[in-house]
Amino acid sequence: MPEQHTEVRRPSLPLADVLKALGDPTRLEIIRQMSVDGEVACTTLEKTLHVSKATISYHIKTLHNVDLVTIRKEGRFYFYALRAEALEAYVPGFSAHLRTLPRI
Image (cartoon, rainbow, N blue to C red; front, side, top):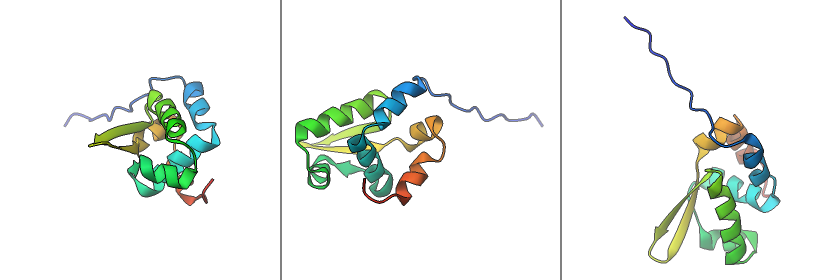
């Protein structure tokens, strides 16, 4: 029987770009909330982060640009989710560690 090899998907962006995106306390808190709660609404982030919609949009765009977040629009509402597999490809074990942390 032929051997099966599982291909490990290599990250496509430089690690420095991903770490830079994760280096901001607000973005780190967004990622932490997503790792705990799954999909998070923009309105939820407004309440928990105490920042403007424009600021949330900027941080989500930064995380989306390094492929760590998916964006879903339903009507006039936006929902964001962590791409845990992408985060794990760059920093193995990090999303599990985030779930153990208190709010940043």
